[in-house]
Amino acid sequence: MATDKTRLQRLERLARLRAVERHEATRRMALAVDAQCRSDDLLARCRDITARYAATDTAQCGQDLVGAMRFAAHMADVAETSRQCADLTAEASRLARQDMATAQRRGELVEQRLDSEKRAYLREDGRDNPELARNLMRRSRT
Image (tube, rainbow, N blue to C red; front, side, top):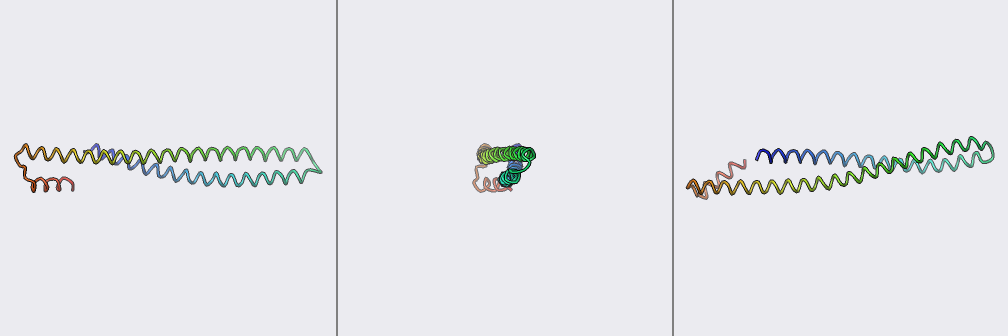
């Protein structure tokens, strides 16, 4: 019984940790959306740079565009990583729900087994008194 209680506590801790992970993934996703907005702004800046330098210094225009495109590629990588984190967090959440359901079923089975063992003990001991059995079970649950 103590090991089942310990397992249940571990599962509850795991569920809390996974909730924190979900919160972190949500935060990362918000950052990715922000990064995507910045990426869109960057593309607009690239168009502005192209227009500004169209009639003047072509070499400087090229350097500015290369820098802007590298940054845009970096931002796309950040968005993809955030999407992957969100997928992993969703999977972790599903597993946490599954673990909690399994722990609950185990707890119910352990409780049923203990109840049947107490009844069997009372029968063997000759104290097949329903009132006494209820009192013992009530005491053991508190």
